[in-house]
Length: 59
Image (tube, rainbow, N blue to C red; front, top):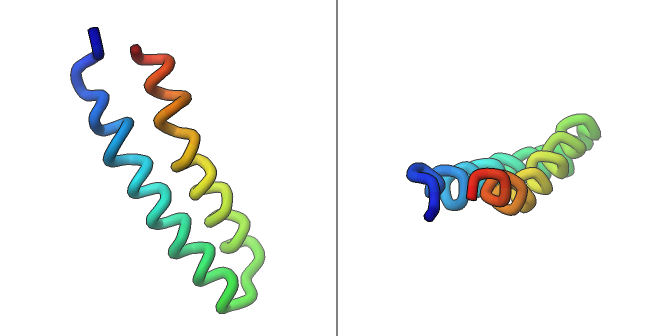
C-alpha cells in the first residue's frame, strides 16, 4: 500500500526542480556564469533522480 502524500514526491517536486534547473542552465549559459550553470545541472539531475530515490524509500 502506498504511503499517503507520495504525489508531492513523484509529481510536484521533480517538476519544480527540473523547471528551476533549466532556468539556471539557460541563465548560466547566457551570462557565462559557471557556478549558476553547474547548480542548474545538479538541480536538473536531482529532479530526474528524486522520484526514484524517494519513492523507493517510502513505498
